[in-house]
Image 1: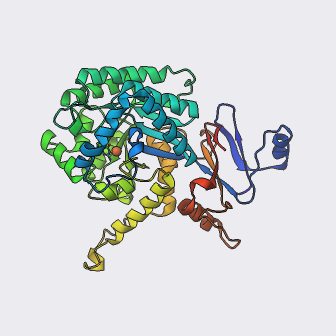
Image 2: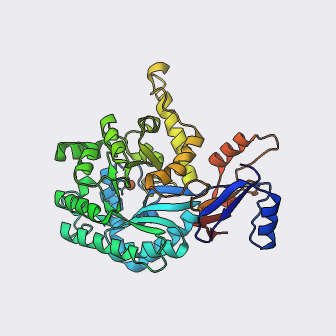
Image 3: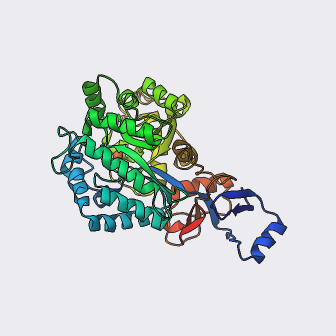
Length: 425
Ligand code: GUN
Ligand code: FE
């Protein structure tokens, strides 16, 4: 929409978003409550990153040539174990949340670590900085797939601490609008005993919390669950009581059509993490098929399995890998059997996954600049020197949208609002 007036209530809810009229504009200007965009500036919905491992932030860009199971043991678990140190946690989480807000991530769905104090710190940092966040204290207790120095002492401890984390977040001072929400977070089936998964499923029913976990991420993970449970990852997650309307399943690359029918029927979502998939999942999620099947799909960076913090990069990668899936990549194969026809998505669809679809997946009124929705938004300036975003006077609106989606960098994001509050700029 060009020349629009968006009115935001004190509670952060958009009350009006339509063509501006002189009288209203004059009224808000006189009251000193009008922000006018310059011709080079555009407003877009805030970005919703539905899969972030907060403690992995110091590890960005390392060891991504390793397969998942080695990457976890040789790097990730060793790093996550450090969050028994609350001061270290505070320093990293402060930097991470500041960085993500600067990159336009207005909502983050976070895994913390197994440490209750550190995960409480993450919740407090998000609240203080004003980022909307769904956060989970990670549960993992199976000695077969977790190291001795980074594992819950028992299923009971993990369940009790998860319960305490939920209580803490729901009673945080300043969180009356529920900007921060707790998420029940079994890391993934391989890392959890049946007793823990069953207990967390029960807790999900009791508390009505959202859930996050990994599902059929790689060949190894998919096969491990099939072998141990005698059923698919998605089915097992459902059977443990962990799949509800607000469950976010990371990756899902190896889910079958019937797994996805089950996910759709529960109203759960797959968090597509295209960069992480390309590096460590042995396959790319067929996003277009998922959308046609009616599954909720949202987008994530998978920090630090994916090596970019910006959701604009996740959007670009989602469109790019979908084209690779469509055309195939091995030129020695005939063109008509090289790829999977009809798999490509446009950058606009990818941007939809990062915004509107994120709101649908989380069942929150975010991701659209429309009355009734929360004002989570970015002000993009297309005329910032020393960036790679350039507009020309012959660009049509559709070109401008595509250029913003593909080329926005952190420096172009001049202001960021969450729930009507300015959090950057
Ligand atoms: N599966 C279990 N834990 C992890 C993790 O930290 N990152 C990714 N990408 N997959 C996982
Ligand atoms: Fe992950």
